[in-house]
Length: 203
Image: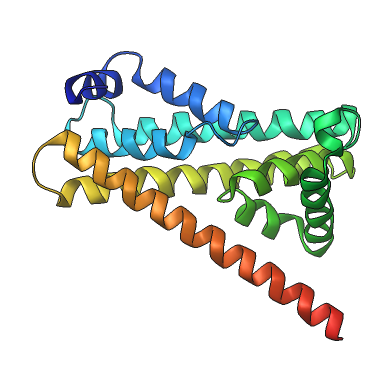
């Protein structure tokens, strides 16, 4: 994709809609770049102004919440072992981790898992299967989705306002920074989870 095509896609009339679809798909398929789309739109809003930053945050929040709510509904209606992909070792391990974390605190795990793609899917499905009350879950999921959208969009906007050279380099650099921060959050979360398991075993 050329730089002109990238800029046209992000700043065109369908930019927000495309971002919303990517964020929604990211709830189910971790290979869909929802975070990157929000960061790129935040950067485009800062340097091009075609879509206000507030609109980027609102649309991204709504799409993220809808995706999480759909995963919760799947867990509530289907459970965690109905379909073959749910019974794989990796997914069952993630579900077991999510159950432990949800017992420790629903709000905490919903906020932290929103920044870790596969953990997000596991937590939302298990929340539905575990009988977490819909009202409580949907409220907490909305707050978590909003915080995530603000973070991703603002990172893009801040980096884009600093990087010289026009909108495309700013978007590329802001996405790279967001990906790096996401990997850092993932690593810290994984390390803390392993430390918690080690403490429980030693105790």
